[in-house]
Length: 203
Image (cartoon, rainbow, N blue to C red; front, top):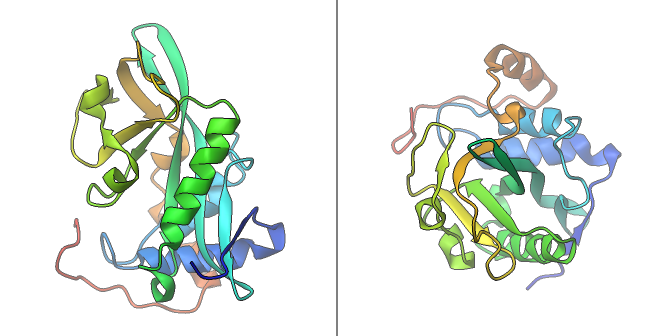
């Protein structure tokens, strides 16, 4: 592994992290992206967990980030607190070097040491199972709409971390808000990038 430094983000690096995030997701799932704006608003949300969130630095440059936030499962009237992360991303110029895996493994170990029992995410089903994630149907957990699909996954940070947990998963409302008009305005802070319709996009 290269001389990657995994550390907390500093406030004077917010723009650099957001720009890296924008480049990582630009035109990936649809023309443009909104993950850089999500990073911006997540940091100031009460559900954000800065104690776990980290950036990856290489040669003085931020090349990756992982951001954690509070989440929970509702089993009828019973609430079980968990955590989630997203985005986890790497600058396109530095992908496929193991940096994302290092960010993930180090922060999962931190979460384990801080007493967290499990993580549930929406993520790439071809990637996360390599790090121990399983489809949430394995844990009797569904989305808030009662659905299961391959991109909806979880991992127990400790043996039996999800024993007795079942129900519907809820992440921070910051992920659900529609803010397309705000993204367009926020984009003006960054160098221009062309929106493209590409094969393989979701929409």
